[in-house]
Image 1 (tube, chains in turn yellow, orange):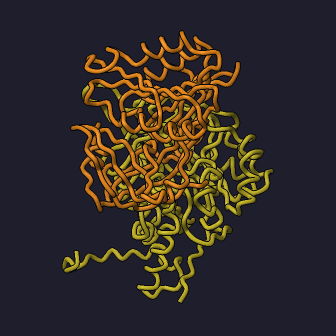
Image 2 (image 1 turned 90 degrees about the vertical axis):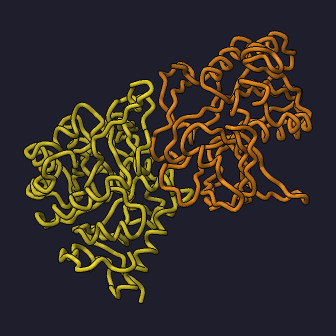
Image 3 (image 1 turned 60 degrees about the vertical axis):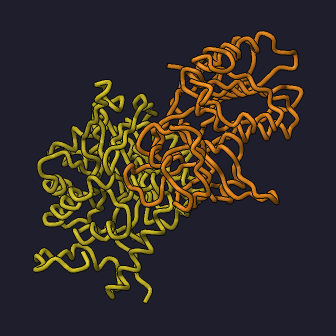
Length: 314
Length: 270
């Protein structure tokens, strides 16, 4: 039995549920030399504004237990250069490209989306309303229910492409934000972005990264992210793209059981750029062992009944 | 050549001192592809804390008696948890080794000379560069500075390649007392009409001083920088350095794919 790994995100059909997370895969073309981009379910570009951005001064990254804190500051080439320089290469490589759209104002989100809607080779818009590392825009929409509704609604009106807001975990109840996005017409939601975090060098009493605070990612956040995906799955009907510290097939499966239709891998791609085929093989093996025909049959099938005894193999 | 990723067995881990070791890895495909100045991203297999790999210049491309490439070595200096774990590895342990990565040094052609300036662990990329320069027939000098005489390593390797050695130690235990930039400046004052290319690797203040000295004496330089690096492939934008081309304003560029070797005149020092 060959496992069917395909999934559907609304109208979007993906050959498998693995998506390269924004900010962890450059513009995709950087990885062409090590990965067949068409073999991924999709890739998400680095976040793009209308104009180029320099980002924050280094140091931008520090490792923490089972994770890392980053404050890159959305360094990027701007949407026009992306369309001109990167998109043709991604099309040629057969990548299904989601573009992570940023804005300092609601109008900028709409404008960037319009540019991408007229370009050839964009499969979906991922709305970045959750980056913790820039002062203006982004998170101010993502941390307000009305702001989330307004930006999703405005962007939906401006494009024929599927719109997928990426949610921040730095709120009291992420599921209510998923609901606001759904009410505004979002085609799916992706979660979670990084957790706002900080690390101090105790010898110098200085911050370990120049921006002082940054976003925590990696296996350290995985159990919280799984819980948040499950929370959202209870409340919304639109597909969920789950992410947060996925390292292997078992982790990816866990997110799907909690309600994710697809998953993104970010930090682990830094550790192992060959992670994709390993996770896919592991998921196919899982489906075979459990005699499940389609990976989509896993979505949300988490059974909350407590187990009576700790299994002997634990 | 695209990089490859292998779980490479440790062939040997020669402790040179309490802090330094040379870790030899059975990664022939990485070795065959490596050009001088390129780097590998490594961490012990199975270690998840620290999570990320660490960048190391390839020190030697290893060969067997028949001349076949058998792997690469890295020069490791124990400074934190990752480098301590690498220092403690034993033969047979496995190391994830992704490479080669990055922009290599450009070798000069004779009669132009190749001057390599190394500070401490910054010696790493110069063994392979010295080989390349020797093959090209360029006269070569290594300006090599360390804290103490005990931390000047592999001098015989460079002597065998016909490299002229100019040594300095901070405590004056061997060679010139003080920083390596002092004998470099003396050399630059007397540089011949055929000119030299100054290659540098070491602590950032040394790199800045070397790049400025080379510029002052109208000699080109190639500088290998080291930054905190997340992925080594251009994905994370952690390792940026400010670079200026001509009269443009400085841009932050990724040292993993636009470097680690840069034209010293284009780096902007903070």
